Image 1: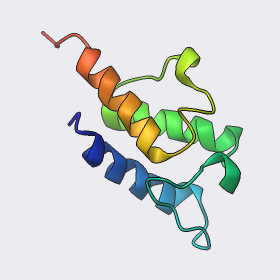
Image 2: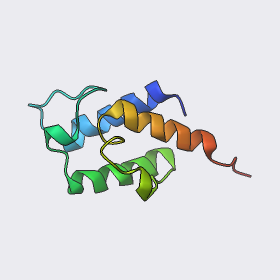
Image 3: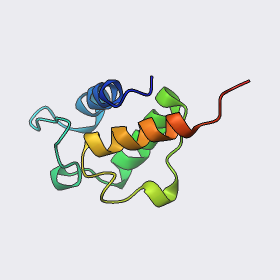
Length: 88
């Protein structure tokens, strides 16, 4: 579950279905902010990440670098999953 490539694919599916219009081609390297990603999209994405992966992004990690593209975001999620203490 913490494989960045797997996380990328799940994030891309979410963005393609609910965030970006069909006119925008979204890949792992698409600059989200340059393509109209806004604060409402961010809230929806954060909720998706929490529901799908069980992690909440720390406020300090929500920045232009993390949101530059799916590759950066997936790497952060993978790191958070890796660092998370094991459940009892």
